[in-house]
Image (cartoon, rainbow, N blue to C red; front, side, top):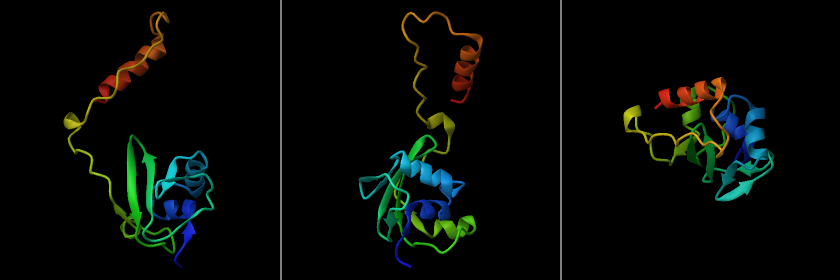
Length: 125
């Protein structure tokens, strides 16, 4: 098997918890194959293709090494791709701080729930 559906491959490689989440990410144009935006989960990927997609707070860039036959354990899934993105710093103190919370000018004071959300954001740095 040399070509496989992109949603299936993303699920096999364990980038998404379910195939439907992988398909949704492709449908909303968040995945690129060889710099081209893919909009259909039925698009195929082959070994050698480079995929770019957001995962969490950073962008993943991976090269497809193998198509895969099943969704196996994590060690087997890591053999399906080669990670091309630079690694994230392990120490949270060396990571860049998140951008400050934005508020519309003239919106007044934050509500209690907005203030708690801002406090949660600040505590994560």
